[in-house]
Image 1 (cartoon, rainbow, N blue to C red):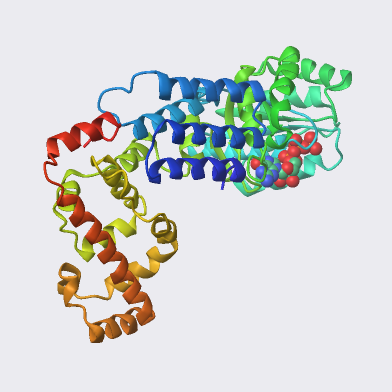
Image 2 (image 1 turned 180 degrees about the horizontal axis):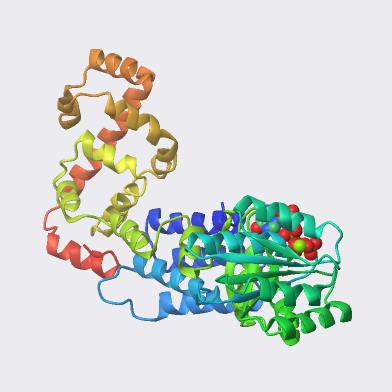
Amino acid sequence: MVLDTLGKGLSGIIRRLITGVSIDKKAVEEILSDLKKVLLESDVELKLTEDLVKKIRKKCLEEKIPAGLTLREHVLKVIYEELVRVLGEKPGSLLGKKRIMFVGLFGTGKTTSVIKLARYLQRQGLKPAIAGLDYHRPAAVEQLIQLSKQIHAPVYWNENNDPYEGAKVALERFRNYDTIIFDTAGRDALDKELADELRRLAEIIKPDEVLLTIPADIGKVAGPQGSEFNKLVEITGVIVTRLDGTAKGGGALTSCATTGAKVKFIGIGEKLEDFEEYNPERFVSRLLGLGDLQTLLEKAKESEIKPEKVEKVIEGKLTLQDFYEQLKAMQKMGPLQQIASMIPGFGTLKLPQELLEKQEEKMKKFAVIIQSMTKEERENPEIINASRIKRCARGSGTKEAEVRELLAQYNQMKKLLKSMGGIKGLQRGKLKDLAKSLGFGF
Ligand SMILES: Nc1nc2c(ncn2[C@@H]2O[C@H](COP(=O)(O)OP(=O)(O)OP(=O)(O)O)[C@@H](O)[C@H]2O)c(=O)[nH]1
Ligand SMILES: [Mg+2]
């Protein structure tokens, strides 16, 4: 999984946002404070994080919610869009670029990325060739040859170990290829030696693209490192490598975005296929642990109260099947409490908090038990007597006591709902207005 730590933190927040009992100002504040924590833990700069959170807060709590969106959906949308914004733009395509030069410090993933990119281009139907210009590190040429073999791409290296001559020969030799990718030598730091070598090579190669590899584990130093290289040779794109295995990836990506270094690809593993075009929207979706924004919004919608459910609930006609659906998605518990708190005069009658908390653990068991019931039992649970309880327990591999507990919880809820329905003068229109005013549109 890409960016495990950041991803886990963010997807946890989003899941809570979607499944939360109710989304009000306080809940938004809690979400924002968690978001801030997660971003800082993944090394996103303090100021950037604070600005981001401030902006999200303003949009969520001070601005008018766009028509057609509930507060929950609106918060989700704002978080998603703002994260996409700080993670940079979608880069332009590399297609049609004939000369691509790689630069970067020692061990930052240049050679690996050269091969990954060549493979990527091959998949686009292009014919890339590779030039090895690293004669600084003894085993560099051999490494490049071995890797090129894996993708059946031609590779050239200079027998005199002269990078400048190598660049010239490669340009000539591979002139009929779609793209020539130049792998260069690294150094521990961007010292004068490396600077001179890269500048001279760039003069010879006249690259259409200069790609800088930066490992994600350096976190927020990524941006400054990009700028430093950019002063030397014009960097057209950054490849953030080793984005798998680090908690600092958020820092690396946002810092590139803020210093204007365009991330073009990301390396997400040692294997050649662990490489992809950088697309902030897709990236954020994945970080959030969900599909695209559309899917997110649909999920948010699902967790809102459905009109039919409200009617059923108000009339106290809740079957075990309904109860099952309530359990199944966990978030469905939320709406019940929302309804309880929305109905005038019900401030005092709350769903037992304990019941809500234990629900998650019990959910799975209850679901299995309900599945082992007949349709008739699910629709008319009052027919479930001792012998049926025994059968359900055996059929679902649970204890009889657990079946009884399920029935008790169901009855408790049903009783509660019945008493809600019994309130005289409760007008559905009013309930809807009230709900709408609280941000739960249905
Ligand atoms: N986990 C992970 N490892 C990577 C990734 N990219 C490269 N590596 C590993 O990082 C190490 C260094 O990669 P190289 O491609 O040799 O780096 P380089 O910049 O060419 O290094 P020098 O030639 O010494 O300057 C290798 O062990 C790669 O397998 C990545 O995206 N994820
Ligand atoms: Mg190398």
